[in-house]
Image 1 (cartoon, protein in one colour):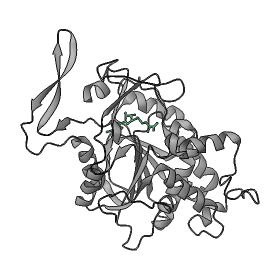
Image 2 (image 1 turned 120 degrees about the vertical axis):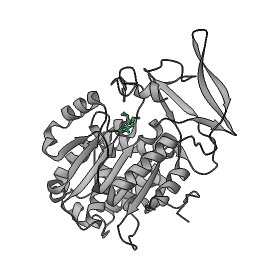
Image 3 (image 1 turned 90 degrees about the vertical axis):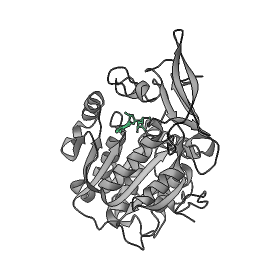
Image 4 (image 1 turned 30 degrees about the vertical axis):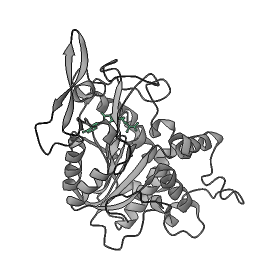
Length: 347
Ligand SMILES: C[S@@+](CC[C@H](N)C(=O)[O-])C[C@H]1O[C@@H](n2cnc3c(N)ncnc32)[C@H](O)[C@@H]1O
C-alpha cells in the first residue's frame, strides 16, 4: 500500500495521478462542491472565537489534494468573517511537490495567507483533514498472522506469514500521525473526517478504486488506483488520549453538518451570532427547509453530503481538543451527536 500510493515516481498520490471528482476516480466531500468547505469554515470560526479570537490562529490542512477545500474555506471567511480572515494563517502540509504546485495555482488569490510545509510544526488553531487517515498504509494482521505480498510467476499474490513481533498493529502509520499532531498542537482542535469503524465493528478491508469503479484486488492498476482502508477510530481516540488530547466529539457526517447548519441559522443561537451578521438572512418562513439560503445547486450538494444513503452515514467526524479549558461546551458540529458509538473517552 505504501509503495502503490507513495513511491516517489510511480505512487498514485506522489506521481500526481490521483484524480478526484466527476472525471476522476471517485468523489470526496470536497469534490461535491463548495458547501462542504463553507460549513467547515463556519466551524473553524466558532473555534477561533472559543480560543479568544487569537491573532496567531492557524488552520492546518493535511491531504489538501489540489487546494480546493482551502479555497472554499478562505473564500467564505473573506466574505463572511473578514476579522477572522485578516488574522488567520492557512498552513498546508504537503510532502509532494507536484501537489504543492497545483495547490499554489488554486490558491493564488490567497497566497499571502498560505504557507506550505512538508511536515507538521507547532501551531495553535485547528488541524483539519478529509480522507487523510484512510490513505495511510496499513498491515493486514489477524490472529497472529500477517498477509504479505509475494510474486508468483509474474503476478503479485498474498501470502500468509506468522507474525514475529508481539506488539505489531495494523494502523501504526495512523497512530504515529496522532503522536505527531498531539506533539505539535499547542492549543485548539483536531477535526478528522473519514470512513471507518468503532470498536469491534466489522473488520476493515482495503477499498481499491479507479475510474469510479471498485476494483477486485489491490494488484490491479497499481499506481493508477486508490487504495484506502477503513479507519479504526477507537485506537485513534485511545492514542490521542494517551498523548494528552481530549475527545471533543464523535458523530457521523449527517449529524455533524446538520449541527453546524442549524446553529448557523437558529434564531438567537450565540454560537455564530457574529458570523451571521455578515450573512444574508434566510428567507422568512423557510426555516427547516432551507437552512443556508442558496441555489438549487447548493441544495443538491447539501443533500449529497447529508443524506444517510449518500455520504451522510458513510463518513464520521472525530474532534480532539487540547488546552481549550475544562468547561468547553460542545462544538456546533456535535450539537446533535447522540449516540457516542462506544468511542473511548466519550460516554
Ligand atoms: C483520498 S485523498 C483526499 C484528498 C482531499 N482531502 C479530498 O478530500 O478531496 C488523500 C490525500 O492524503 C495525502 N496524504 C497522505 N499522507 C499524507 C501526509 N503524511 N501528509 C500530507 N498528505 C498526505 C495524499 O497525498 C492524498 O492527497
